[in-house]
Length: 279
Image (spheres, rainbow, N blue to C red):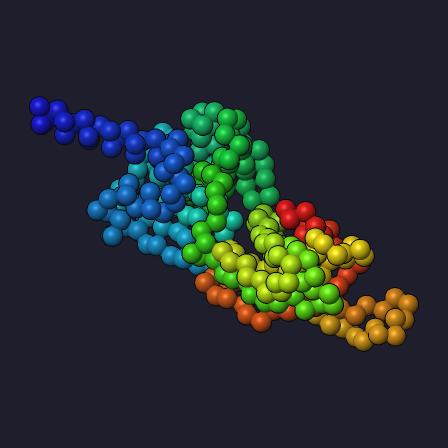
């Protein structure tokens, strides 16, 4: 009876591993490097290295013995959480791109198409899933399974500051950190009336435009933004530009303090104008 129970546990563990390395276990994929560490078991200490660089948490394993995946032999496997929250499980094969593509299309039931950074395929059932193929400089082929998820706030940076433009805080105000990279999510908070200080945390390391939009008492329908002063336009000469909107760099685990949003704009670039909708 005890032997049967142990065999049942063994087969259950093998089934879970098989699903994981076939990119079929979504819950495990969403756990990022932690799931891969569990799958590697005692080998993780000798074959794997974990890093947290620029907001990306990665466990990379150079395998002592090739592991079967998609009917091929993977020599390297990595799991990561990207800046925007995407979880990625990547396999490296010594096989050529065409062979890996054929095997992946057959097992995943997808069709890869050319992309700027290799080849890409969407999952026909789960819109959160994306698969990527790329040929490395050393001739090896990388297959990555990606699942969209929430960013890790522990790896993020923080922006803290104050609304300092004329009339700030009269009513509720939306403040947003808008990433320059459109692959990253916009992050906003709504301040109640009379509150002028803001704090936006959990931001992936990247560059952000910082903008505020008064939701009340904004008859001129203006947007305020963090900007670099250029010249004095108090005399209002035709075509004078007093300031230019510039991004702020957010670094992993760091807080940028003392930011002042003090310039008001009648018109702003489309990307910055997203503060009006908050998305």
